[in-house]
Image (cartoon, rainbow, N blue to C red; front, side):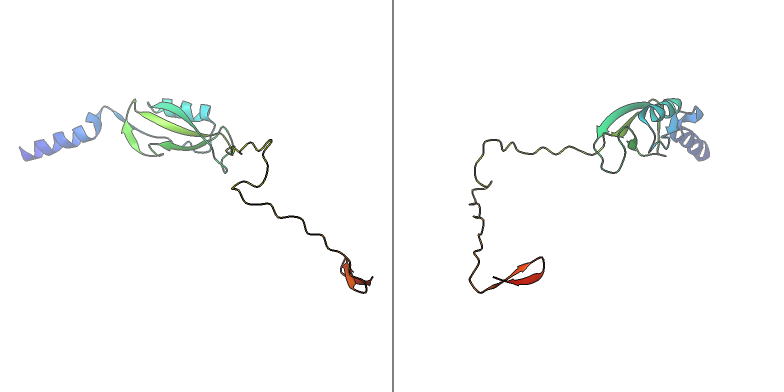
Length: 129
C-alpha cells in the first residue's frame, strides 16, 4: 500500500508522465524572433520585455524569467528580456538659465598680469619680460 502511494506521488510530481512540463531553452544572446521560436517549440509562451543594457547589443536576449534550463509547466509564460541597447540619460534643460545649478556662484576667471622684470613660463621655457 505504501509503495503504491509513493509511485502515485512520483508520477504526479513528474506531470503524470504526459510531458506536462518543459525546460526553458537557452536563448541568451539570440534575437527575440529566434528565442521566441525556440520557446514556443518547447510548449511555452514567450513575452518580450524591453530592457536597457550597456553590454548586450540592441535586439538580443539578455535573459529569461524563469531562467534558462528551469523546468516549468507547459504553456507557462516565459518573460524574454530583450536589450534596447544603452539607456538614454535625461539631462535638465538649461536654456535661458543663469548661474551655476545649486545656487553656487560661478568663479570669476583669473587674469594674470605680467610683472616687470619677472620671468614667465611659455611652453615650459622661461622667458624674461
